Length: 135
Image (tube, rainbow, N blue to C red; front, side):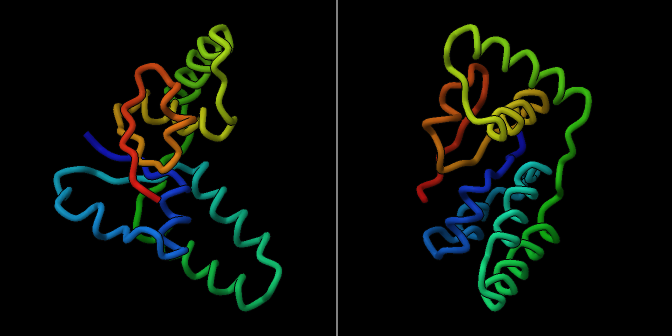
């Protein structure tokens, strides 16, 4: 089974609260990915950085992440899973954030585990395997 890493983990790594290499060490048999949604969230943070030096540092960090981990697209399987999960969660009154629903759909559709620091949101998704990394 592979892992999809949520932006909360990358942000915690950037801030020095978690060492990414420590938590993925020993998992050589697993594929580790990030979603195009996570890539966008991280890049959004680059564009929001007000000071040029901070923006440059953040950009270098994000580009290193994008170079290290394969980025999964949103394709028909993910869209179908997203629609189903969204309808089920809305009917149950358990909605989560729009980006998080795309990430959950990516994991459920592809049989991946969500690695996150955000158990509150992802823990509500039926059928989603969640691995909480302390951030």
